[in-house]
Length: 107
Image (tube, rainbow, N blue to C red; front, top):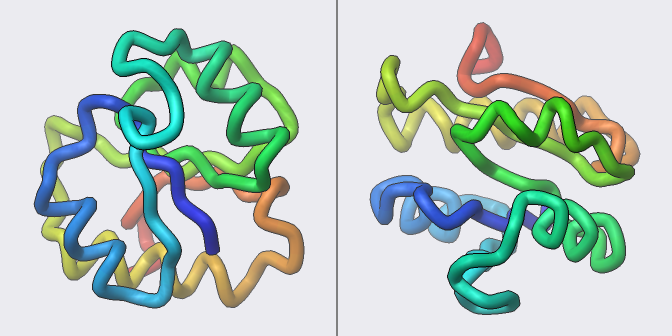
């Protein structure tokens, strides 16, 4: 899975996802730091990335890209997030169809 991490994703998740089976990049690596949600969604759709975020605006913006949402309030452990992402990746044939909350029972 190719994961595009939104601007406010903590480093602990970036490192854990990169150490797992995913290819990981950040918005800052591929777009401007202040890119809008619409710009991020368009980039993800065009380039085959699944957006990893705690910003529920992505549910509204839609787009034909995958979405992995985590709760900043629940603050799941990095290992739990990685386990959930790997299970989700194994279930979906097309990453653009993913719209899941992690861990939310996936770990």
